[in-house]
Image (cartoon, rainbow, N blue to C red; front, side):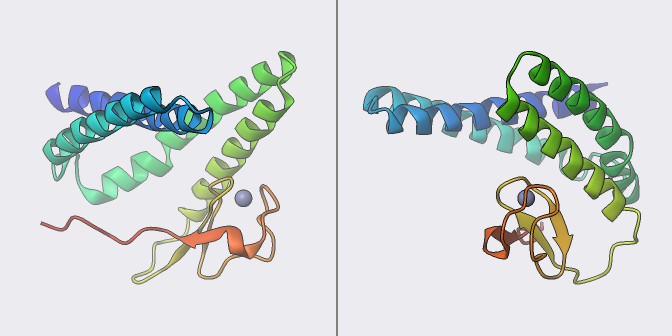
Amino acid sequence: MPLAELAQAFVLISQAATRARAFAQKAAQDGHEADARLLEALAASQETQAGRLRLLLRGKIGPAEQNKAEAFGPALERLMADLSALATAAQDDGQAVAARALTNCRQVAEALRALARHPAVTGQAYQVCQVCGFVQPDAPPERCPVCGAVPGKFAPAGPISEKQ
Ligand SMILES: [Zn+2]
């Protein structure tokens, strides 16, 4: 069905934009100014495209309750399984730093699933670890339980935006 295709394209283009943004930063750091500008243009273009698809998808991706159940249920479970396999593969390839990051991603997904088991509370604020993505309600923890980051590395999750 067309909506599933839109949603898939949105994910793909968003991922490509994130990658292009990271490549642009790396190019700039390494002194490849012209390449950095071109990669920034690619990232900006893909962000625009993703934004357009998001507009098409908005309000057309099912009832809110259903979306929450999908995002924190089957979608997270698939992601956790994939991340476990990728972490194991990275470890087997001798990529210890990558394996650790992927394991942290799986741990964060697990924590998010646990968090979503409690009903969401109106006005609830969430703090996000800027190192690993761990999410905690209210105030930051003394140490991130996943990566050990200090409270200063936590930032509030973004505001609810784009009401129309
Ligand atoms: Zn963390």
